[in-house]
Amino acid sequence: MPGTTDIAPRAGYPAQLLAVSGRALAQLVRTPSHSRRAAAARKLARHSLWLSAVGAALIVVLMVAFDRTEILLMPARGTPSLWPISILTDFGKDEYVLSVLGAALVVVALVAAGLHGTRRALLLGFGTRLQYLFLSVALSVFAGEILKYIIGRGRPFVGGAANPFNFVPFEGTGAHASLPSGHAITAFALAFAVSALWPRLRVFMFTYAIVILLTRLVLLAHHPSDVTAGALLGMVGAMAVRYWFAARRLAFAIRADGTIVPLPGADSGRLKRVARGASAP
Image (cartoon, rainbow, N blue to C red; front, side, top):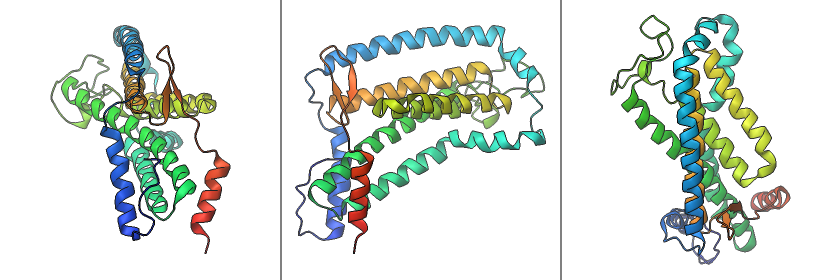
């Protein structure tokens, strides 16, 4: 969301809300302006190609040598004792994650429309970071849904056998939407995006992502190669969205060598003071 605060203070609240929302969308599609974006683009291409090459090799190895063995070791689908894992895995469901992030964006816009000056700028700066998190997950998941439809890989034991090569391209049903894992895409896109903004949370976020990945295996929702592909797609997607934001000087800066780093943001104490000020009588 934009950090500018030049919306006319005398305008009514609906006009303020419309202006805040409009600028939040406009900043995402404005012309890139960062002088170092070419170096960042080259670095993104190198890292993406390297990750994709290593990931593709690992996916093939898992598919050939490990997928069948792993799913045979898992408890039967629907085992009653797995109910805690069934609850835990929903923390990586894209609908839930995107709903929370979307609701947070709406709240930021509603509150910011009633603020002015520094308080508005602080809150909108946080809103820009929420936009990055939302788009990192949403665009990665969208790409994953296209791949699921094209590839059409059957989930474990679909068809009755432990066959990791059960492919029906363009089949379009949930039973043949195993590769890549949507939960893994969501969890790893979110983990990378949060870590890119707040590096101190890296260990926590990637632990979360790995836990979500493991729940998909235990519940026989996916093969190991499925979750590996999802993790790869989620991270590459979040990397691409980070470049998009950095090229427009949103939430990120670009160093001389093309490295993208987070811009300093509002700390939690300042955001709390903004929230208290917005709710004060």
